[in-house]
Image (cartoon, rainbow, N blue to C red; front, side, top):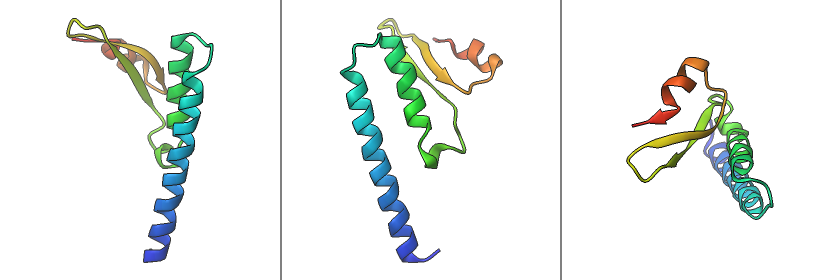
Length: 88
């Protein structure tokens, strides 16, 4: 891969990241319920081309008691959903 190609890919990834940031910011100002915003957020983030190979992930909320609750996810297998629904 040429140096120019690397620079172009980095620029494209940066532009896409800025677009995602803009979409997430707009989503944060929506009237949607928090859980809907979080689900849409994970979908927007995982839709990035350089994350397509992974295309799965989750968002957790801190309960302020040392635990985390999974509040949205995309593409996780059922056993992982069960084992990760609450992180202690």
